Image (cartoon, rainbow, N blue to C red):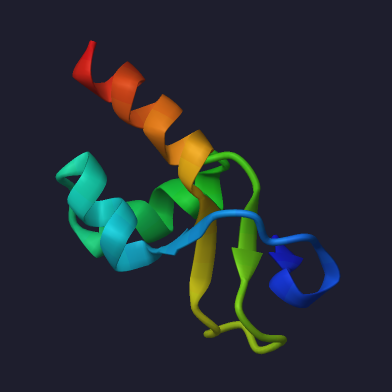
Length: 68
């Protein structure tokens, strides 16, 4: 995972919004992120428990795959 401050952040969304878009629990989203199933994941800060941030485009792609 990368730190959001070190990259350009075009359209990022948090774990709760990803969970809502994919109709999954936030714990599932966190697990999928750790497994690498959600593309590149950024952290909002430098601490291990910092919020996760996801590319909206990547999550929309995953949503299409989950729906198929």
